Image 1 (cartoon, rainbow, N blue to C red):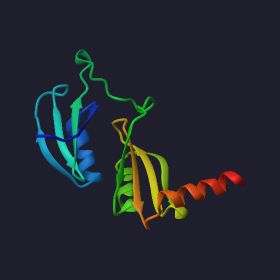
Image 2: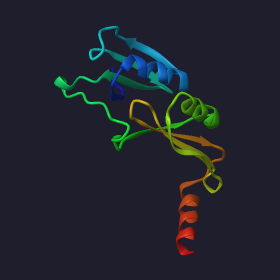
Image 3: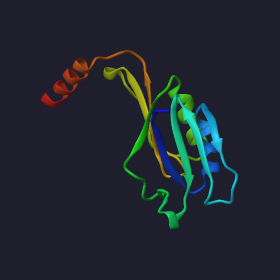
Image 4: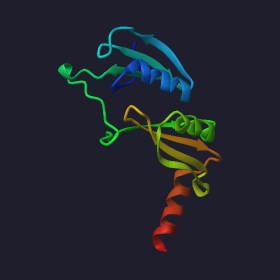
Length: 144
């Protein structure tokens, strides 16, 4: 078997899985039911596999904190950015950037931090804009 999996240490993988199920359309693959600190949950989101692990300091599994998020994040291109973002905020996630339309780029994007310290960036494509068109747009902005 080959593939890619993103691993995320969280304070409670079972609670994190429930949060992500409320926000996104996840497919649950494997979920353990041990005491907190020993659990893990594997799920797929748009065909990508994620593996949540409970924080367990003796094994150097340290979850990000809300005042110290890690500098990696997950980008998702989705069909319903406003609905997905609203769900995240209504479920207690922290707004970093509200849904913002970037008409010249043909997209809307938004960023939030989940209650488990990870950053999620959402994109919705409204029209295809080539890389060259995006470069021309930025060059025009820089010249002003």
